[in-house]
Image (tube, rainbow, N blue to C red; front, side, top):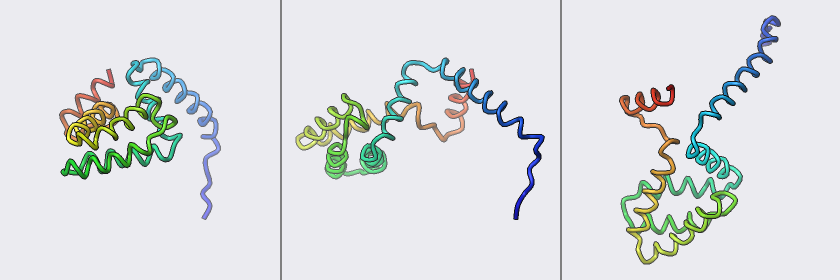
Length: 142
């Protein structure tokens, strides 16, 4: 089944795309350094499939497992996949070094992973509770 479109709307495509670009450029100018840094960090992850898998492992497994020993073991596996391409030099080296430390101090290592992930994802993962979400959206709106 073929649906006919209203050709009078075709001219809106170019105008709409131009307006979207203007709005995106305007919002990019309003971004703070930490927001820009966070966006670059996330974009870098998509350049390396191993980094995506390591990130999923960190967030879906290490962050959720109650056993410190098991979380540290899974973390070491994820840290081993960390690359400079996907994580940047400092984060890749930090993950690998913390992976080594996790053999001796698993509790401390897992705590560092939890704290770091919470810090890095602060602006990326929105709260689901109504009041904090409203506050955040109002802040972004302003």
